[in-house]
Image (tube, helix red, strand yellow):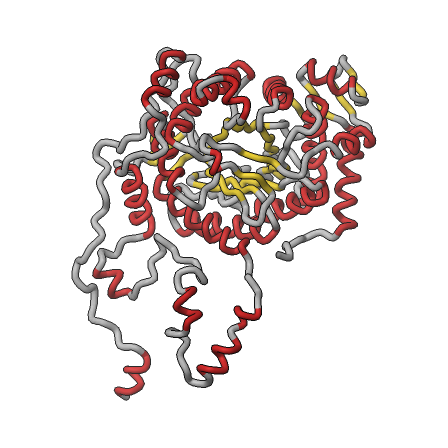
Amino acid sequence: MQYFTFLDPRELDRIHEASLEILDEVGLLVRNAKARRRFAEHGARVDEATERVTIPPEVVERHLAMVPPTITLRGRDPKYDVTFPRRLPVIATASSAPDIVDPVTGVTRRATSHDIARIGQIVNELDGFDVFSISVLADDAPEGHFNLSRFYPALKNCLKPVRTSVLNVEEAEKILKLGELIAGSPEAFWERPFINFGYCSIVTPLTMDFDSTENLMFFAERGVTAYGTVAPMGGINTPLSMPGMMALINAEWLATMCLAQMSRAGTELMYNFLPVFADLRTGAYAPGAIEVGMMNTLVCQMARRYNVPPGGYLGLTNSKVSDAQAGYEKGMSTLLGAVSGVGFIVMGGLLDALMSLDFGQLVIDDEIARMIKQIRAGVDFSEAALALDDIRRIGPGGMFADSPMTLANMTTATFMPDLADRDLRETWAENGSADIHKRALNKAMAILSRPNRAALDAETDARIKAHFAGIVAGDATLPAGWAPFEIGSRGAGRERRQTRRRMQLSV
């Protein structure tokens, strides 16, 4: 594909130069003393009194050359491992919402570990999603088990790569121990570590806090797959312009890249961002804004310049319900990311500015994800695809519906949606006039009603429960009272419409 771009190579070079100027002249506030020592050992200038670190351009360039061009996220089952960039984008659920739209009552409530288990089983069966970025928090987590109560039900019910962040290194150690218990031994786990982490790599503007910086170094030192995300808010903690925001957040990514490579040369990274401009009429956080997609285009351009995998939070929405606003905000930014060459999209399931997950929206977003992959699959051009022989044979006024090419490609040449309704209005009315959200909720419930092929075996589960006393149950079960919407014949809503041809003949 020819990827869509906003900037020419000279403008990209200028952003890179501006970022180097920021790191060399302004620097960063680094709260973690170990990180400051590490920066100093590798050629950065450190002022201990102010905790300010400035990084010379040659230090940045030296460490940038160490970053691998790909990153691999691993799942419990190796057939779900993903290495990218690749032709198709890797698509993940969005993560860490505190709330969930209850599928029984329709009322928003705090999410629990039971919800994570259900989401994990559903994601495991949705082909559009490659990664389960743990969608919600667990309000029922026992003391000391905050993120263990998220990773455990996720890993227990999903074979695909699972990732989320942790508060500190102590939590990370627990999650890695969970991986060893699932694998059967430490040796088996570390031969193919299938747990993936994220971290908030920097607090914009230009600040590295203690815990996330400690996590960054720990993951790199241990060879654990992890990537950072920078989440600026234009007009609040960055300049209110796309070039200004890009120069600042690019400097932040370069700084965290340096620390990761200083911790372990060759550490796999992703150029991953959630660049949001505030709605300055109110100061509202606006991840559904089209500028998120536009900024991701710049991110993709910079990532290709550095030869590292580009990623971004796209397909997000400020809508509180699964409605037309959710549809166009989610569709617009993911489409822009796809044609810009993004390698990793975090997009599935969340509403209300990343505050709540909706099971129906999760399934709808899977359909969007599959459409995005259809776009990136591109056009397979060949002489056979030109179909000149068929065009000559069938000729003017003919029909191609029964040609061999049509019959051979009828289910593969175009995208076949599961949820989008393409029937006549009369047929739709006869089938109950259901909207897409009801159909999506029914699909989610159908998945949860089937045996969970991803569930951990009883022996492994017992081993985990014996090691972590009081851990949550982690089972994916249907919520009590969740029943499918009736979608069936109700009788015609009106008389069958005449076609235009029939209307013309009757005149």
